[in-house]
Structure formats: C-alpha cells, structure tokens
Image 1 (tube, rainbow, N blue to C red):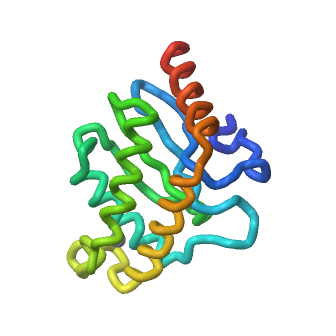
Image 2: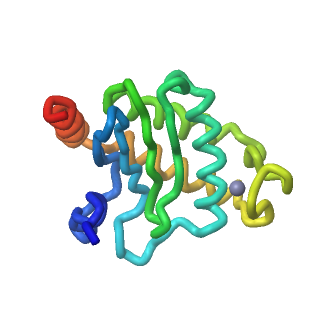
Image 3: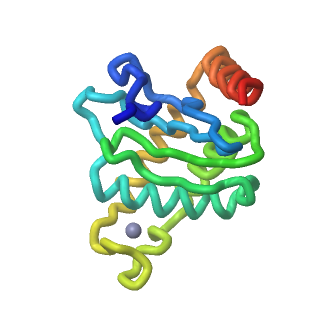
Length: 161
Ligand SMILES: [Zn+2]
C-alpha cells in the first residue's frame, strides 16, 4: 500500500503549532498540533471529544464559516485537522484563533446531549477549555517567521496544483 502524505512527515521532529499539511482538489488541510508527538503528553479522550464539538461549532459560526469543510481530531490525540476551501493559510489561522477564544466563553459542550452525539457521556468541558486556552497561548507565541514559513508552503502548493 502507498503511504499517505501525513505518515511521511517525521513526527519526532514536529513541534506544536498550526502547520500547513496539504492542498488537494482545492481543499487545504491544516494540522492543528496541540502537543508534541510521542512526548508523553496527550489530550485526554474526553477533552479531545469536547474540543471537537466546541471548535467545530465555533468555526462553523465564525467569520470563515462558509469556507470550513471539516474539523476533527487526530486518533493519536496530539491535535486536530481543519479542512477549508477558498481561504488563505493566514485567514484560516485567524479563524482558528477566533474559534479558540470563543471556546473560553462556552458554558456547555455544544451537541453533547444523548440524541446529538455518539458517546455523550465522554465529555470534559473544563479539560477542553484548558486545552484550547493553552493552544491559543501557543499560537500567540509563535514567531512571525514560522507563520510566514507555513504561509509560504501553502503558497507553493497553490502554485504547483
Ligand atoms: Zn460527540
């Protein structure tokens, strides 16, 4: 079997951040890496599940809602994927920042009633808020050069398609 692109990255060299992953068929995949891979610190399953509900809701109600195609967790519990269409890396970055800030104001996990969710008892609002706050602080501390480098990767992918 062919390896998929995300397995070809050296995960041991990967740092937390908001990484451009791929541009395929006009769909940009971003890697929202909350945790350093294989470093012993993972988002708990309940917090991961709640962050999925909360950020998906915030992104789909945010300024770029029409461009958001999918948001979901990585099985390794070190981050999430955001799929978008028709917006730049920088616009997606700002949409993620706004969504993370919106999560701080939530007093319940959206869609966490039994009829709305496949595992409604496995949620952790406080844990999810704490992961979102930590990730927002991480994004705010990223050096401008790193954002410019990710932006450049997205721009090159756009040219090559
Ligand atoms: Zn659910």
